[in-house]
Length: 176
Length: 290
Image (cartoon, rainbow over all chains, first blue to last red; front, side, top):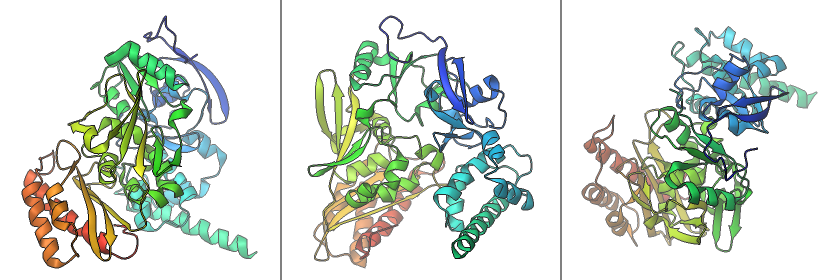
């Protein structure tokens, strides 16, 4: 359906998008100009991904595309045809980041909460890809996500605590 | 803001991309990783009639050694380069530079070819391609041609790429065993565009610098080498007097331009700091990880 056609190359009309969101396959007609976050929020009612700057600077719109974090505002909904999207709703319901969420609460790593879903998405990929990250690496990794409330210390504290806890759990598991 | 209305096509063959581009000319825009293009669309700095998404074109993907060159498909992402053992072995400058590019979520989609085609003077890959004497492989319906990096960047966001051409890959000469590389940049926040950055490479022959390449980012309207400074270093052993002479030569040579946050004079000074750091890293016996 996205193959080029001589007759109507320049139609700006809606195109059919078939995408798996949080494990559920869904099919929608979407205008090419609609970015992924507007599609998730307005068409699918998934309001957990937030729209901040809308040009890739703030990170509030961070979601997963085919298992990797991306800026949802810098991806068109039509680009996700045939692909997998995961939002904070799916990640949270999976239970896989309960420790991270609890650490955020314990450390007061959120106040207004606007950046939090993006922070959790970004931190999750850090936990998966750099399980032994040092504090400095955590700061660098999270530098792509803005928070206007907390001053970042508490967020970095929370992530470092989860890194350490998961690391010692792995050691305990290996020793057992 | 929201992007203006446009049409969208996702061909799966390069031939179809080229045909669409030929047919629609300036009205069409190629969509690689979209990490710059999408932002400019959202800000309505760009209003193409048609986006040609290249994500499904397998001919533009993949990293491989081909003869004496490392070939990087245009659609290879920054994250793929960052994680590639092939790149670490044959073009270690790229491995050093990759973490400086924006942030993880952007590196996961942004592409090598997209960065080269955009030719941002503050971006990492154009400077690295210059420092490594890389080649851009461009194709149109008329055929394929190779453009040396030193001829490719022609001005502010301007390149030698014709309107009907697509970058299919970039090729970088395999790093010889005695190659030394260094990369460093200053940014206000990690991952932001460079205030000043330097991609450096040299051969290290019996303690002397040979074939020094110094490619600057963030200093002016295009990625640029400082040839006079390279010549001062040619065939020399690194010493404090040589460092001082190199910095002096650079100050006379490098024409810096102010940006929103830094004056030309500040950039001039910072370039000297970068030069010292990178030359010391080049001289360090282990891999130069600045």
